[in-house]
Image (cartoon, rainbow, N blue to C red; front, side, top):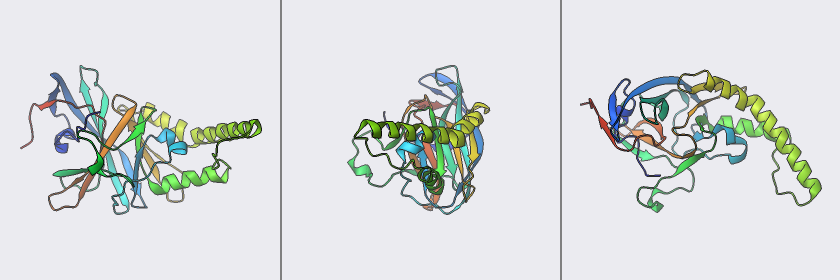
Length: 251
């Protein structure tokens, strides 16, 4: 997947009702706030929420101050295949405009090792993506551990395989009861397929989820910075835009 970046100008990608053409196909932007992300640890995770029990994704290395931050999605309405899809998701860390962006990295990732037009991204296999605080993931993993779901060493015997299968089924049932099914109902009731769900964690942490572009794939995120060097936002790019011409670019 070619590195596009947040449309080169993220202000345009999040300007409501702005019109343009992508590969000649007219579209308009629909920006919508879909919740607030509670950040308690200072570390944000972007991932496929339906694979949290298995993938256990690492947070981005860039830290942000604890607080509540509005989350927006940029939906695209057009006559083409991308009509009605989420093109970008944004955690707004400041109301100041971002003027430069850097790829969001997880531990062990180094942009200097990337080939041209490549990126570090996270995998999506359910057509759904999300933002959450690391404390929320830690709480979920504690719930799995307390129920005996933490040991996933490969089974060596038929008896171990049967026990492994039972643990897998129990963990899956617990996850979908606590997270998966309630989150799906929230997304299905949303016009853009996005929304927030609060978990019963000690912090009252939440997951803000949204449909991911064309569906499954690997998607990069970027931290945007203001002219003064402070954080402006965190954006995930779902690869909708490829060759954009804006009808009314901002000055």
